Amino acid sequence: MKRIGIIGAGGIANGTHIKQLLEVPECRITAICDIDPAALKKTGDRLGLDEAHRFTDYRALVDCADVDAVEICVPNYLHVEMAKYAVSKGKPINVEKPLGMDAAECEGLQQMLEETGVTNMMCFSYRFRPAVRYAKWIIDQGLIGNIVGVNVAYLKSSAFWEGRRLDWRFVKKYAGTGVLGDLGVHLIDMATLLVGDIQAVSAVADTVVKRRQRLDSDEWADVETDDYSNFLADIIDRRSGERVSANFSITRCAIGHANTIRYDIFGDQGVISFDLNNPNVLGVCSGTVDLQSGIVHTVNVPAKYSITQEQAFVDALHGKFCDYYPTVAEGVQCQRVLDALIKSNETRAFVNV
Image (cartoon, rainbow, N blue to C red; front, side, top):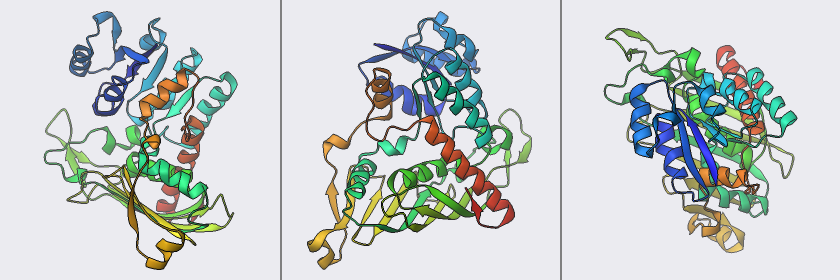
């Protein structure tokens, strides 16, 4: 039985981490930390934790004798600092995305992990969707041949939520980027997992809702992070070694979409398509019969491809690593892509990763 401490008691902690952890029989949540007294009380009461296991200092949670591993669910600028402290104490970590503010910061954490061997995980949660895992298997079997093109979209309407104020995601010193780091990292990670490493990018990003009210006053302030980002990427197909052109579209200004992720991966012998609003089905056109019809048909993903992010983390704590398990090293590589995208948007030029 592994005892989990969670730093951060906000939406991502309650909506994903805690929800999934409560369904994993091999662990229990023994401590939480948050600087917001209301959030700490609400989540602490939900979990039935006594006051001695509710912390406002993350170091106290990490040092707690009743915590075996730490989940980091806080704003981006705190990820690496908190992860390094946990690793220095020998505590395994599960870190929310993006890993940090830039690659240089993240590389220091990766070096610590390589030196200590502490178990670690990145919260690239969409690689645990059954459709993604089945697509990975199909591609690795060569069933759609060599990859020749990728089209990706991540669509949300969250920029237009009524009354949404200037939370930390809109402030550059806390978030680093907007949709690029919040949403784009998932697309980058899936492209890397399914196809290969991103070599170069050309990006355009901007802000649509320019000003918002601050959280703690009636004052209005500038939004400093991007509401949308579109970019082209050169990816090296790991099977063929050839260059693949990929097109990415990411926005939180898409009215009518709560959280839509669409992927089309085109091979020279077939295609795979998925929409993660329906994560248990996969669109496929592959093989002689399919190619003669030329129509993408839907298949149900076999049950063996289903696993939750938190089950995978707890399994790793017990020494059992699932296929396609995401580590901090992959978070660092994703951060390098983000750095290149930021530079490309600033210079309006193709930038090598």
